[in-house]
Amino acid sequence: MENKGIVRKIEGKNLSIELFRDSSCAHCSGCGQKDKTIADLYHYELNEDIEVNIGDLITFEINNKFILNLALLIYILPVFLMILSYIIAAKLGASEGQGIFVSFATLVISFLGFYIFDKKTGSKLIQEEISIKEVTPSDEIKITSCGPE
Image (cartoon, rainbow, N blue to C red; front, side, top):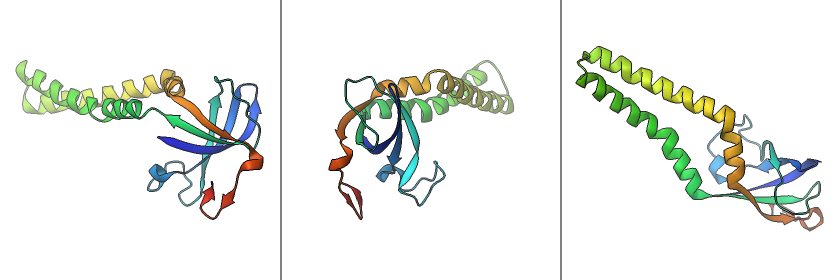
């Protein structure tokens, strides 16, 4: 998966990049800017030995396998744990109502676990999977009606 953005600020190895909304953002208003071309500023720690200046166009790449594994973990694992906890509760002699309560409690606990994990290490984990594929100097950017080329 690729995304592009323009460098707006540089502080040491930390870049603030204004990301362009891509096709995967087309139907989402998660950043709160539904009809705008630019999404929120993204902060990136530059680990590569690449010369980057303010105004340069950067193309990012994120590992597709990583995204798929993360989606499976976030969307499938809680449902699996919910069903498993219901089955275990039923085997231990819980009533149907108690089993449903246990399964929903497991669902809440799993989402709470994901939330805590995300706050502690989520952004660092994602940062490791993102790499800069290409840097286009600001004087070589050609803007058309469809965005930069």
